[in-house]
Image (tube, rainbow, N blue to C red; front, side):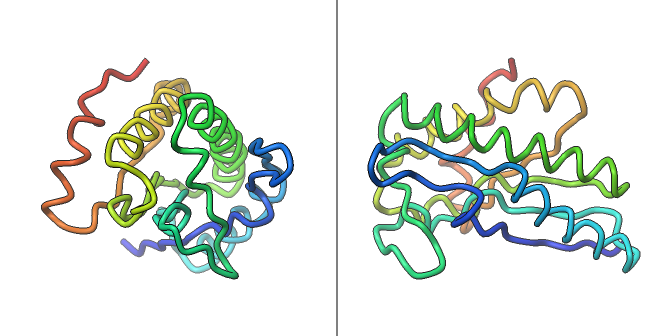
Amino acid sequence: MPLFRGYLEHQEPLRVDPRTQTVQVDAETAARRIGTYLDAAKANGIRTVFLTLLNYKMADGKSGAWEAEFADQFMTAQGRQALAEALQQVVRAAEQEADRAGVAVVWDLWNEPEGATALSMEDRQAFLETLLVSLGELRHAGGLGVTIGAQNLTGLSYWLPVWEQPVV
């Protein structure tokens, strides 16, 4: 069975306003971009697409031209909740596009979070727990498929406690 893995680019659909430090999301833009991935996948006989929601570079302390730096949003409960809610909007819109296209999406919630070295391990784990709770309704309703892309087998031990949290 052919599969496709894609990364979302968050600079336009998801960003932190530098003035107010609030998370802003353009779920429609994200859904449109995802819809393009899904339509291309379907046209090429691909029925399952893995999409990476976050990349470790969003909090690695090295802001680059193609990737925004969101480290501050991960460091407080309020910031984590705001970011999780913004990402929930993106996932919800994307799941609607997936239904329209007839393609299944499996979400890599955070690619290689071990590389997000601007954050403590506790901040990374707390964010993933917050995100999983935020996505709980979608996970129950439609069997939303999620994973965390650990860098290596050693990294697995960091994320097992996150998975042990009950889905609410």
